[in-house]
Length: 331
Image (cartoon, rainbow, N blue to C red):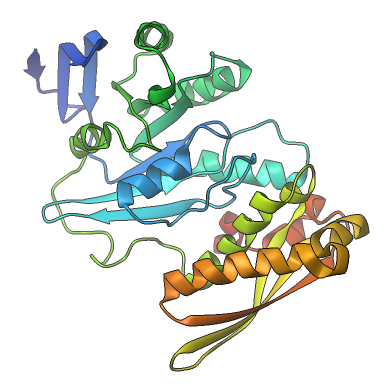
């Protein structure tokens, strides 16, 4: 391996070889380093972006589910060590949108990619290269930023197949690094942090050391409630809900909360409430339990359901529900 300084880059390396147990991930690859502070974690729905960020931070700052578009906002997760601070931005899954909401979520992801210093592209190692990957790859090629390909779920792939996958991706693009991981089992995450560390410039911290996320507790409360809805409902319901915190009163050992669940059709309201209120009660108890653990206080949660017909195609409603943060910042 040889290192050559360049005017455009902090460091440029050629003829890099990288080997993991049973897998030679990089062979005569190149690495070009630019100053960087913020890393965008992007990829298709279900690739494991939120799972990875939570695993890196060792704390849940982004909700998770197997439903597409679980993540709707760009969420910064902040990892502060003794000698470094990492800022990871979890982005909505990039997809072909069917409503205005989908277009807003894609815009959120694209903006994070444009604003970050390093892109961490997370792919599902169990899946073959598809049209969605091609779409993201074309976008990345336009940005001209350092890109680390993070191959997730390698614990579910045989070594021979994994090697084939890594070599196939290496042929598609000149990635700065390719790192196989398992976010769920937290395999190879220290190696991934070491790769990201190479992009950290010297300087002060961007956030206070105790801060874990750039979103406040009220946002996290709404997301936890929405996560329970995602777990307990199917079909169109998970994609149709928004959660608004209407009221929060804190006492010494207890917090009282009222939240509104918004859906876009009358039929969805009936499904969410359920027969004799069983569904809404199940959602409330599950959310209440996690909020109690998170806030270290007893929590009394009340949930209501409101219909806002076709809200996912209404720009004003999307903005009102806090999902178009980019336009909010410009107002």
